[in-house]
Image (cartoon, rainbow, N blue to C red; front, side, top):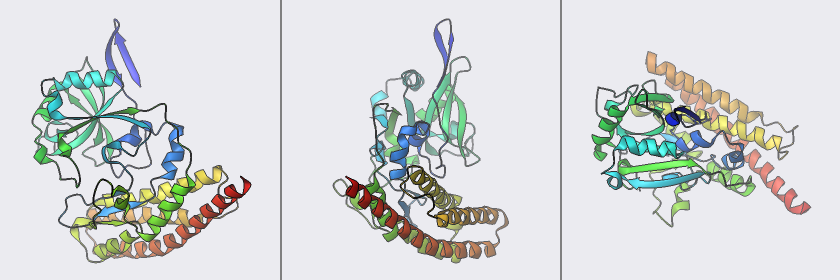
Amino acid sequence: MKIYYTRGIIMEKQLTIYETPIKGVQYFALSIIFGDKRILPWFFSNYIQLEWIYNKDIVDRYIKFSYFEEYYIGIPFINKQIFIREVISDTDVVRFLIRNIDAGWYTQLCLDEYYIPGKTSFQDNHYGHDNLICGYNLTKEIFTLFGYNNDRKLGFSYASFEQIRNAYASTDIELFPVIPNSFSYGNLIFLIKPDEEVSYSLDLNCIEKLLKEYLNGSNFAIRNDLIYNPTDEKLYGMNIYDELISRFRNYVESVVEDIRLLHTIYEHKKVMVMRIKYLKELSYIPPETSMDEFDLLEKKAQIARNLQLKYVFLLNTDLLDKIADILVDMKHIEAEAIKKLIIIVENVKLWNKYIK
């Protein structure tokens, strides 16, 4: 956090944003807590399952990590407040955002990016998307935003107070994609900040369960069945491979041109390698135990992702067939690697139970 004063008055304040291993999907919560080592046991106990809304009639097609993310419910290291826009309808949004930052709150809200410099839609088309407001400068009268920019990468952008007023005031919630089981997402404002009081221990039961669910392609939404009726509109875990392979083989445009899909696959393998390293550091996996399969998966996923980037520029369909071949190999390698890791976790649990 950076704070600058002039004659005792705060003129500039920037809340901290951390780099995370997951950038293919916008996870604001991780970006504000990942600098805290206390979260690592929780992070490595989760972020194992993947899901893909693959129905061509649904707007939201990207692959993402499955966890209880909606409204930040499943993130123990986050304090949150949720408002609907009408609650602050009589408040100047600029003053509202400045007060939030002064109190240490990051603000996530939906803005019309037509008015936001550095965004793909800037002065081109009206497009509603959520952004994280994480800083301000009173002298320059600008806010710092964190989110996807016109280079399709997570990063900072800057908008004047007046541009933010326009982006907020002109935002029509109809601009925002329909999110299943969501209450008018574009109408919501989230205030989030790190929770310094929370603790979480590595949960081997959770890791084992998620690994088995990933291997079997189990419907993660069943965990929400007390709130929502689970649907079959998503693919999970290993079941994603066959559909992804099919769509690359058949050159389905919405898939082969969406670089988020394979980038998330790559980040999933990268996080698995990080998890293996973490478990070895804690002596849950013996140092002499080879887990090279996960390193191989990360490399193959990176190659597939890079081939897709090459395809976007060259439009050479031979590259898509190569990607499909790599995914076929990855499916077989990963199935055996996950089974091996499950056995290791089960043995550790048995040993822990025995020594107690």
